[in-house]
Image 1 (cartoon, rainbow, N blue to C red):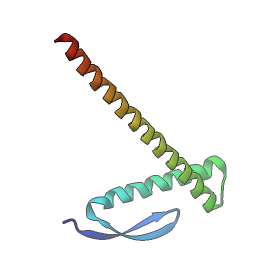
Image 2 (tube, rainbow, N blue to C red):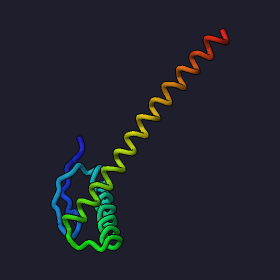
Image 3 (cartoon, helix red, strand yellow):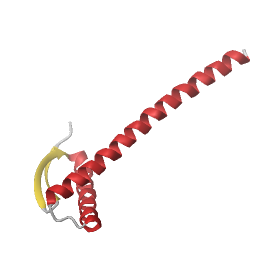
Image 4 (tube, rainbow, N blue to C red):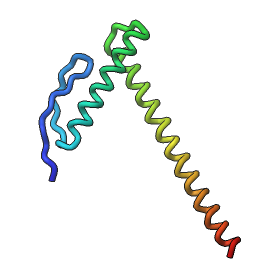
Length: 95
């Protein structure tokens, strides 16, 4: 059983106390670092000062990236199924 640890994560200047599985703590900290980088980039790129607007922009960007990845995963699974079917057909034709 994994132990739960308490960590403090800072996102957009806000310190968030969290209880997470020990194995996930480094991932959570890395995600927070990535979020802060994206926030900084959005603030510079679009000269946006309102934190809520910046967070909405970052959220939309990250959601879009996840959506694209999930679509690519589905396409990859479909491709793998077709390859398996072709391999089976090839074996049947060779026999």
